[in-house]
Amino acid sequence: MELKKLFKNTRRLLQLNQKEFAKRIGVSQASVSRYEKGLVQPSAQILLKIQDITRGD
Figure (cartoon, rainbow, N blue to C red):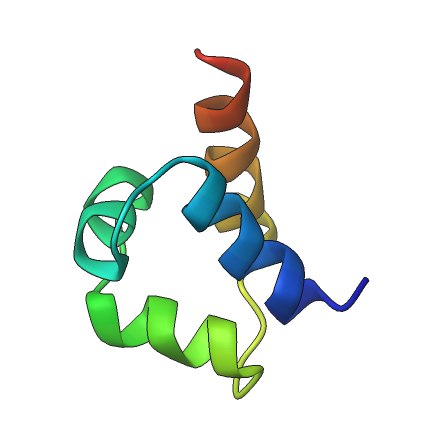
């Protein structure tokens, strides 16, 4: 699965809109939009934050 699809699917599974998800991972809503469109790749730090959120940490 492409990273952009995985990113969007994870956000949807968490039932968060882009603004809420952005706040949880410490980026802007515009950044989330760019990640989901595949315009930029999230950093390893952002991916680790998402991992923590999905694990319930």
